[in-house]
Length: 444
Image 1 (tube, rainbow, N blue to C red):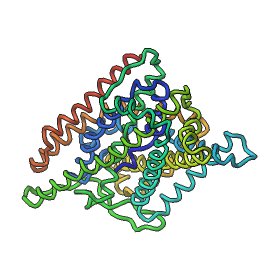
Image 2: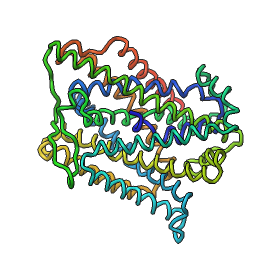
Image 3: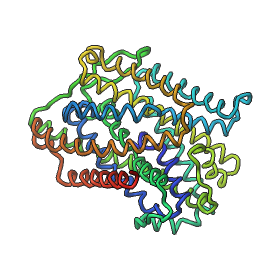
Image 4: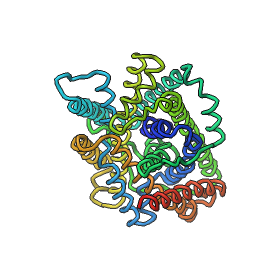
């Protein structure tokens, strides 16, 4: 599932790193993508095994832990309207409309229009997840195609040998001029080389709506206007220890690595292409994207390849990319808030998952509208990513405890993942913890 994995890391932070420091971090691209692969698999494993989503799982670890994770979720996603304003920046550069407004006014106009259009999609679409999935796949496909065409430019082809040589031999070096502010960008890039933080947790909710594994017994979120309500239970399901269930379970868990291999591959391809273009076109000129004009300055990618038409294509693609990220987030974060409240508060359970979801959808949409004028896109995205990084440091150990200890105690023993899978998720968790502690030591 590549769509939810792509966004600001590929479009913003990795190109910024490469444009700033050239070849220094090229060798980190593939390892950074690979780190998130086992994390997302284990999140999916919990849901296909139990039919529960992750905030219910956090509650099973410990209620106070669930509350802590919810507080982090709440803080992280108070300001994700920055994605809509980032998309709006591209449309302002493209259209200059409305001409009677200042540039800030034009940005607000387009940001609010984007929010209104996508909010309408969620409210009036009969079943929410299939609509979001189709939009994301379309945006991802268009983006990758455009990047591939741009990367065929002679200037870009000239750096193939150096770039791919470093990429596949994992060569990297910490530059001497790496500042504390640059360290923020590096941590952000590592966190967003994939879904990142609570974005990984989102996978749990979408595969349940997709009906994978025990998720097939849970209802889906449907429109309050055009859809019929479906029962979404507050807790999951167990199954008996027999050969038929074992066969079905092995099929579900074989699907997860394949699904994530496709998603990780598409994400890595996008990241390779955007950083290749930054290395070939921006770094030699010292053209570093700024946090206040993340989309506009990177149109240089496409302007070098296709001239004015190329810049137009990039603005459209970038706007769609970031606007689509806002849509994915408002849906995902509303699901996670609803899950937390339904799992922990009886009144919310009685009211129903769908109603709690749409309440949070309304709250988050209003918050996006209010907060857009108060911070620049880059500031928003960097702050979010740092908090996301520390969220992973906390929930990966909890995830290991759930899948490797808690579930095998209440489900058949053959639901326990292999030791190879345990080693993979442990390595990812250890890397995030070490990097997080290093960051805290340097920063404070």
